[in-house]
Image 1 (tube, helix red, strand yellow):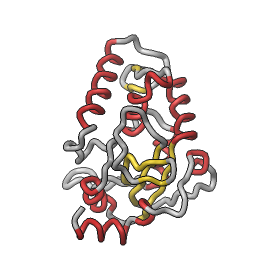
Image 2 (tube, one colour; image 1 turned 90 degrees about the vertical axis):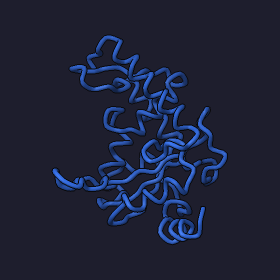
Image 3 (cartoon, helix red, strand yellow; image 1 turned 120 degrees about the vertical axis):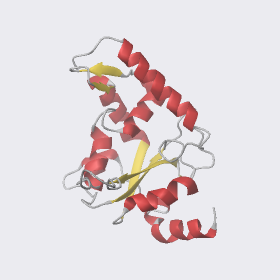
Amino acid sequence: MNRTLVSIVTTMCDDLLKPCRLWTRAEVLTRPSPVPKAPGVYAWYFRSLECVPSSACVSLGAFKLLYVGISPSAPPKRGKGPSCQNLYHRLRSHMRGNAEGSTLRLSLGCILADKLGIELRRVGSGNQITFSTCGERALSQWLEANARVVWHVCERPWKLEEELIPALNLPLNLDMNATHAFFPVLSELRRAAKAKARALPILSR
């Protein structure tokens, strides 16, 4: 990591890399939530995930930093206006949503499919692909036990994300992370799960 990146990480990201505490799913979903309704970057820490290389990842006790995300995403150069999403909305979507709306849940579900006994399927009208109601519930329970999150409020989170992804070892990030050794493994897991889901009958939910 060069001096510029070290400076960025240490001055702007202590909230992410040296937080005073990590937050659980239950705490994030509490009302009122501790998550601010503001733009920023969030970092996900997990207990050891089999098959995911994490020896070089940032560690906090038993948890490893495996993924960072932002909300909102970078504004489009033309066309639609900027997103109205923020940390509060995005983290709740990851915590209680489904694989259709959360790329993190999709990745985790594909990695944990055998362990949790879940499977990616087309649901409802067939336009959505999720782990079905039971599978998403199992994934949420796993998140409660094994995942923690922190966040850093900033006005242009996409700028910080551009620095963090190449500077840190983040095996669960795919966007801007194609050179990571786990990228082809995770990409293939997701591709195969989606292909299988399209070949199976549609579930009601």
